[in-house]
Image 1 (cartoon, rainbow, N blue to C red):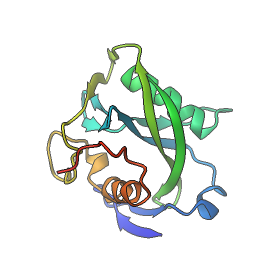
Image 2: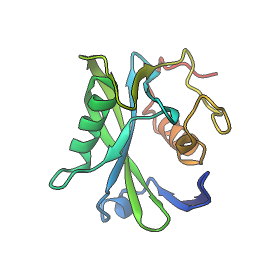
Image 3: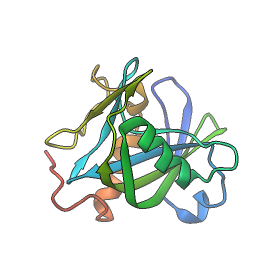
Image 4: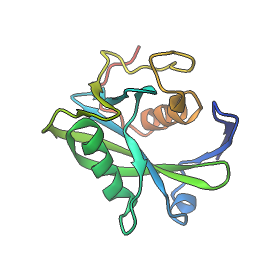
Length: 162
């Protein structure tokens, strides 16, 4: 279990322990989608580059929300989706973390605050303070999850790393 503060000063706890996260229902999701070995990001027109994610709707599972949110924010369908962790912000907001493979891009999403997608030749590692990225990626969830994905061989072998 990891404990830290997010960029807004709120306490965060992060776990990759299934015994812990399967007992808490999540209200939000965060997805690490990989397409052709590259991590797929969405562009929020106000906040900047971030990972797909959002709210779990009433009656919806967090996995269904992850699939829906990824489609709504990137136009991509997913396959091989797996819940790998969970984090809690300010002791109340529970978010499930998923890793998935993009099956295909079926639409270009650009409306409202959705400004399309972006992929980098190498997975960005140190995004904290980078003005291109959303402040939601400035805390330790992003780098700790990348580390977890690598240590469990969940990042595609051909994914570029700096």
